[in-house]
Image 1 (spheres, rainbow, N blue to C red):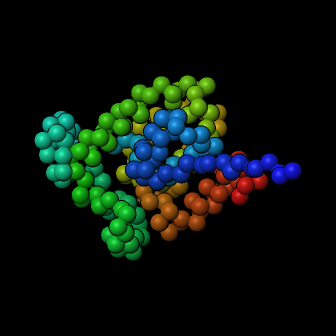
Image 2 (spheres, rainbow, N blue to C red; image 1 turned 90 degrees about the vertical axis):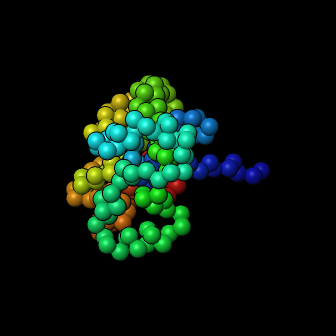
Image 3 (cartoon, helix red, strand yellow; image 1 turned 180 degrees about the vertical axis):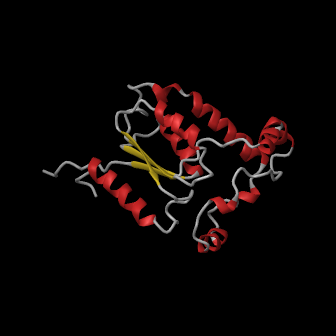
Length: 199
């Protein structure tokens, strides 16, 4: 007789803008995730006066000029304290240059952020989303993450197994800053506590 197959837990991990996509993926309930880990969770943006003006025309811009470049919400210098990071970032074909954000991407991003702010599954203790262990890792000097709104989202989350860890002095790209080993160590400890027999 063959031994029963051991199912490996699927942990959703997301970084920066990917956290917005990742959370919507979990909320869609198409797949079962054993846990979710979000690093530099870009769930909301702080609207500067210029971004607020741009947002007022977002729908029209997206419809009429979907590929037009808009003022990005992120200043590159806010990403990382390691100067060598930017050369790697610029040469990586899989990254999205913050200077090339289109009107359509900006409009859809705002729509996804608004939907996240009101999704009832987040605050329901019995929802699959709230029953999934969640870890949020944030740098205290992260100016990309709108920390006040991210904290509100975290507080709204009805999960009994949730943690937010703030790393003093780190910027947005926690896995690129000089203290990245501390971030990885905390992430691994969190995972090992929940999945001791799989790592």
